Image 1 (cartoon, rainbow, N blue to C red):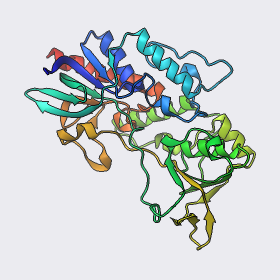
Image 2 (cartoon, one colour):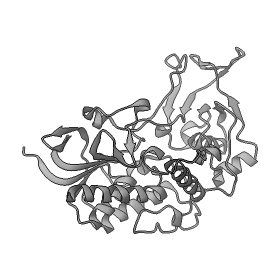
Image 3 (tube, rainbow, N blue to C red):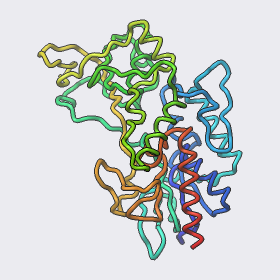
Length: 355
């Protein structure tokens, strides 16, 4: 089968890939978006039932199209986001092909060769926008292999009714840990234990995604101008007090325990040697960037990251990384933040292709 040719291949059809497609289309570039998912919506279609955005709809929009308000909700849920992304893709007639799983990107006689399970594309530039949801991180905790109960990551959690009558340990002091702990704490019949590495750090109740985006942008601007690090979002706290978390916290239902020392066959063991039984452990311990498809390019550095200047890979100027976190643009892993870096990447590629 002959390889298809295009100016730009975008890998990933979630929010970052769609934002890139919007700007590439406005610039008149020839591109294709390859998405491994069977349906539109990116990782949002796999989120737990009660997940809410950190910001109101008007502050959670991709370029060119405001997210509509969800009836009766200040902070839209994941299903609303999926509907918005599906509509966005159709509205701008973005060239998404799915399901197409990208297996490798290689250098090939002056272009980048994108190999997939559905054929090969030759591109003058590639935007990788696969995010991190597909690479959940679970720490190497002593006894994890011995625990006879159920273990799952954030990605596997859906609803509290799945754990009715069970003793559940939630691990993690970030937003996912707090939200899932709050979800379980409000469901009668579940014996919840929430453990964190350090005491939970809640952001002020009036801070939401708008302020977080501003903080991330200010930090990036300060670093680019050689000024001292403002600390960005991390300086404000770890947990956004969205309404369900705030309600559970104020009701005294979110009481974090220090991290256990190890897992046992039937529960956890604390540092003082005491034990507690558990039926399930939910690991809300974060993600790593899903970049295995870029392995043949030999660009991975410390912590699995690829060195970038803006979104552009330092070791391969035809490659841009979009939406993986602050190292690929301030708040670029968020709906509100990815538009700016998508625009910058698209314009850089347009300039590159015109020379």
